[in-house]
Each structure stands twice: as C-alpha cells, then as structure tokens.
Length: 262
Image 1: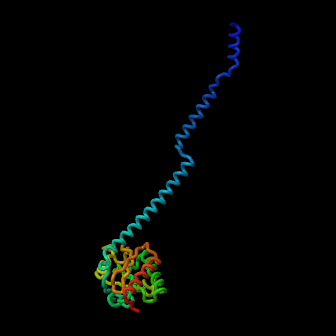
Image 2: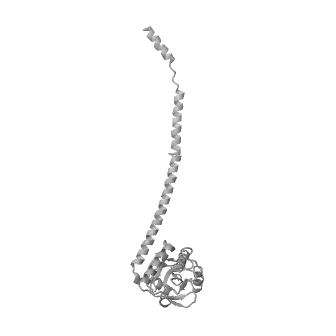
Image 3: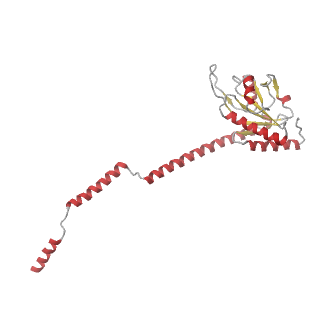
C-alpha cells in the first residue's frame, strides 16, 4: 500500500504543469482570425477573379444580344417591306434634279434603266455617307461586269428644308459621278417617301439655323427598267451581296426578253 502511494505521488510530480498562458494565446489567435475574417468578408483573389470573369461574360452576352435584336429588327423590317409586293412599292415621281435645277421625271429620265434609290439627308453624320459609299461600290462593281449603263444610283433627300438643289448637288459629288441627287418641296418629298414605304420623322418646330437630325428608313430600293420594285437591301447587307443580287435580277430580266437602254 505504501509503495503504491509513493509511486502515485512520484508520477504526479513528473507531469507537466498546466500552462494557462498558452491556452489564452491560442484563444486570442483564434479570435483575431475570426475578427479579421468578419472585417474583410469572404474576399479572396480567387473570388475576385471569378467576379471579374463573370462581369466580362455578362458584358459580352448583353452586347451580343443587342446586336442580335438589332439584326432581327432589320430583317423584320426588310420582310415587311417585301410583304407589300412589287406593285405597292415605289411609283412614278417628279422632283428637282440638283445638277440641272430642272424637273426630273422618273418615267422618262429613268426609263429602260435599272436604278437604285436611297432616301437620306446631307447633314447625316455617319449612316447616310456609309450607305452612299456602299451604293457607289455596287455601281462600280456592276460597271466593271455589265457595262456603264447597268445601274443608276439615285439619292432623294428626306430633308428638303435644308437640302436645296445647290446643297444636294455638292453632296452627291462626294460619292459617285453618276449619282443623281433629287430634292423638292415638303409635300413632294413626303409623297415620294410614302410611295416607297419610307419612314421619315424630323422635328416639327426648329429655329432657323438650328441643327437637327432626321430619322428615316435605311434601305436601298432596286427598281427595274419599267419602274417596278424588285428588291430592297438593309444596312447589314454588304456591297458584294447587293451586287450579286442585282446581277441575278439583271440576268433574269434579260432572259425574260427585257430591254436595257444603252
């Protein structure tokens, strides 16, 4: 019994004493980590990378969706124009030739010629110049393959308030020497635009000298030598696509016995 008691006491004296300082230090370290984590939130470089990547992906998605919707609108507008049928698009018009200052009658001055019509305005900042450049490319491409009289480019202003014959005359010179620029009074332009199903909207009350934009349809209208509507081309159609389409109609017209004025 005495030996057992002595052995127990000896073993107890050999055990390391409990150190409360170490325990308190461990607890303090854990509390500091928790406090730091609570202050900074769950931020990590990995989370930041995921956040940036997700944001970039959403931006690309929204941009692609915007482009898709725009193309769908243009395609729907194109199909709407075609749905009217050839007899309901275009028709004879009589306006002022900006080059000569004389009246221009489509039934006589364009008889026997394919022609392409674009409605725009000379103060247009970018879209009209881009489209008229494209029209000029089409004319040059058809000239090289089909001859000088294959296609006539026609520009009709939808802003006669500012686009006088003198202004239009100088404007069309910047695009193609064959381009015919036409203008007229408000009622005449409105009537022609309506016959081509062209949408035109300009501010009603504008002070003299005040700048403004005109909202309008962005189409080329292809008309045959008899003045009948053939096809239309939207902004997203390239000059190569327009040229290929025109050549097809040109060949079909000749194959059916049509005559081209030389």
